[in-house]
Length: 450
Image (tube, rainbow, N blue to C red; front, top):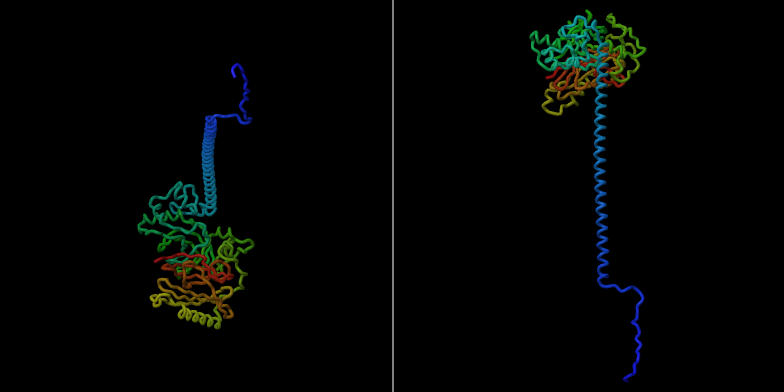
């Protein structure tokens, strides 16, 4: 209808209560921005971690370098202290050795020594000879120095020495010669100079000699010489011993330094012993053996009368010897056929005062080259009982008895024999140890080799 107006009421659109409406762009970009932000934060954190790791690595390296420097410094200090300690010890040792040398000899003991026998200040040559040889005020002459390089002496601390009659004189073996000496006077003079300066037994040294026939006397070294490749010292002995040396070749004896024996003398030991031959000995010398060369000794045996053995003991000794010979002949067979034809059996029985026995029986079977050797030794007591005895003599595997005598002053006879080894030999003296029933080498010398 015209002219009529009507009003139509319109209602507002409905509204939703909740999250606000977002655009599509905001919904897409928001996670991307958050991811980029997290990545940036992770990079920053990683960089800081790398810097921290580098810092720790550098710190560890610096600590290692410092530790190495400290350790090196400590090692250098320790080396310095060790070197100082070694030098101080060497100096003290030199002082001790020089003091011992001065005690062992004196200018009065040296007497009329040969030229070069004493050092510049009059000090005797002894254990420090090698030191004086290199650094002494009066060094050896060139000829004597050349010869000295071929001389090998016994140890300077040796107390026992081998003595034997050679060339109708009693000689002491003090070493070997590893070169060929010419016979001209210049070479002999150089040899005398070298030995006099380097000998472990200086000129004038006092020795105590024990030999067969009850000889026990004091002697003195008067000079030096050589004997078939050995360095020997000459002795001034009594008329009795000199006569025996001229009459018997290979007469053995033992020698001990007077000062060494006195220093090792046990307390309470009677030191007024005299030999049965009437030769007076020094009162400061003990008659007991030095405790350093064997096991403890048993109680002293009863006195032994050195007379002829009874007939029954003699017969028994011969029977025991023959029994040992049969055993070696039948049972001791060489391992090789070539040795069977050359192996020989030798046997001996010797009477003496052996503490528990009156007779010693020795038998051995050996080849000339000593590549095969078997030896049996036994003692025979006064009742005829046989006591087996071992022999401990290093490289010597067979022995030819020469003499039985009291070599160490313990009242028991010991054995002096010619020892045979592998293409070698020498004179050896073995003491009888009753506690272990063994013959143990006391001293040896005048050795030879093929």
